[in-house]
Length: 133
Image: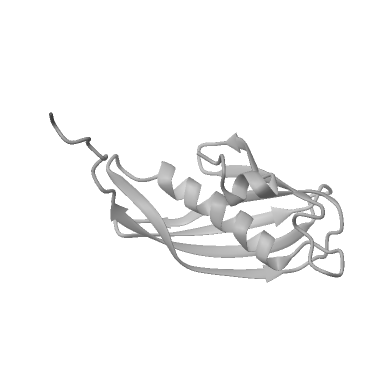
């Protein structure tokens, strides 16, 4: 599903799923740098929303989906290179909304960014059916 998306462009890869979390990595390189050579805060927010939204989709009933309605991100540590790892855990997984905490850490397990993502749970449209005939 990530082919041709920002996930593919930025090198985001899902690496682990557990009973209460979803984890993914993203490289810190020219694709994710801001002009000073540091990890761009927007790239961290994109990683957080990707992992949190994907985790949300795994937590809903069939026929339901999730869309982001609010995200915040506190950038706590600069990273110049390597890989960062994001871990999403649910704070609330209700029938209409979900709230996820996403912690992004560097290769030394130091906290780089902490984010909170609120998702709306929505019905998915029915699959597209070709016209009969």
